Image (cartoon, rainbow, N blue to C red; front, side, top):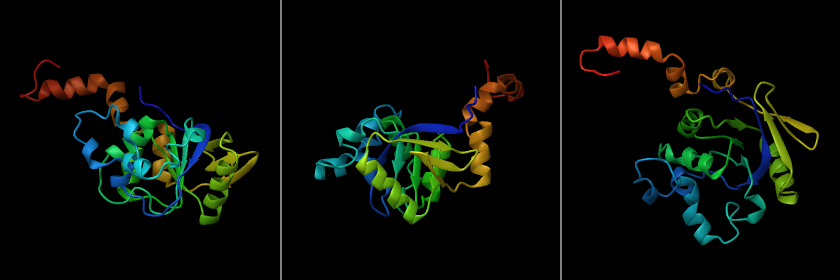
Length: 196
């Protein structure tokens, strides 16, 4: 049941600006729900209302799977709703100069890779997307590369995080389901758990 993540492909979405925090990614008023369902509809809602041509509102980027960001993306509060909202909107990988450690950890927990590139590379990649929104990007975690139009750039990702994606160990729920007989065995020995 656990899922390995290595190769991700699709068009990109450029989101320029440093220190974009989780309060902007998903405003607090949308955190009242018991599940994460529907969060994708409210990604950057306040920013989108204030800025008519926000990238997440731009029809040219509505099929994007790769989010391009600048420095310190996902800073601020530790809400796990931010990467959940991005993933439910359609983003399957984030490429940026740097990410908040908590945001990166919350992203890992849901199978959303966050990889880093240099300032020069992110500027070049964003320019490619802005000039050609249909350009397709291929991120290969095993090779640590991001390719567009035959040109590759190296991406940064910690070895332990990369290995978690490649082996499927990022998916804690999937790992439990893979060995559910072990879970039942432990539950049968715990006196306050019945009916497992």
